[in-house]
Length: 469
Image 1 (cartoon, helix red, strand yellow):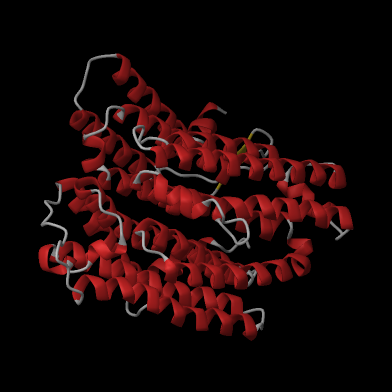
Image 2: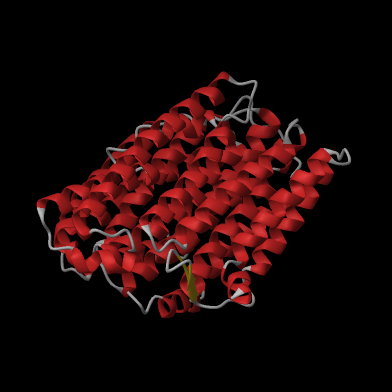
């Protein structure tokens, strides 16, 4: 029994041990920021390596905790993204007075996400969600001297509290309608009754807040702009990715008998989310707000894929999240470096960027091409599989709307590329020295963008793990 516990909860236990190590280092010998960063990066690398080996399928605590090869892969994607963010944040963290606290909060929220992904019970899911959300609010306020950072944290915690309230209310309604909170048992009690539909709407609204689906997106741009870039990238990629993993699992297993109802809801939400994300991204001058609305539009495309309700839909969503980790973190990696050194975050600041920083310019360009879905980057294949998944339901109107919006997105992504390579600037961003960790992170992201697109084995592997849906 103890062996099962240690193996099945291996990834959660590793993170818990890392948190205690960082706590002991904090209260023990005084270390420099650089030493703490080096230790934390090694521990995060060990965490990623630990999730790759000696994995097994099984359940614990009467089914409240479950794991299998697909869940392990989802956790490994989040661990990889967290390591990349840590590597990218070196320039910013070296100047900060609370480096250890940042990593403790970072790992605490990652631990909550892991429990959330492995939950087999709605209460277990809710506890994991809260553990992942509360430390994020503190991280959003980590630039303690900036008023915008405090404002971002306040907006995030209020929005999260409201979303959590809706989720908890929905969970209580599900229990009232079915008499159980266990994922495997709820589906057998669903018959599409009005109370059950209302409970699902509340749950959908709660999920919508967490992943920034329109009209639950209003907090996103302000929080992205006010929070430190490292936290913004974490919110954009890791936080949303974890909730998406749970979302597809809940839809396809718990609420599968209500697929006809939630398909229509997702159809409407996907169209509105893509349109609003695209139209508002065009108007943005702040690079972080631009990436915020870009991420909202990307969520719309993911919803299109989810409507496919099939093994291909699960595989395409997880594959796209993996691509999104590399693409978005490549973009945020450049933005983080520029912001940490110069403090400049406007789109206009990147005019003539290529003349002074050619390497960073190409990294940002490749990332933007991938986010736009320009072949042969991985983003093209990611969106292609999402659209193919949505087409599986035969709703070609939805696919046509999504495809047309891809063309619109080319405009605002290429607007940044034009500024980098073609526009003149009297005060261009000076030549930046790229720290070794940041350089490594950017190279990993660029390699990921290329490799995950060119090698079809990546998608095939994910598809093979999705056979249970």
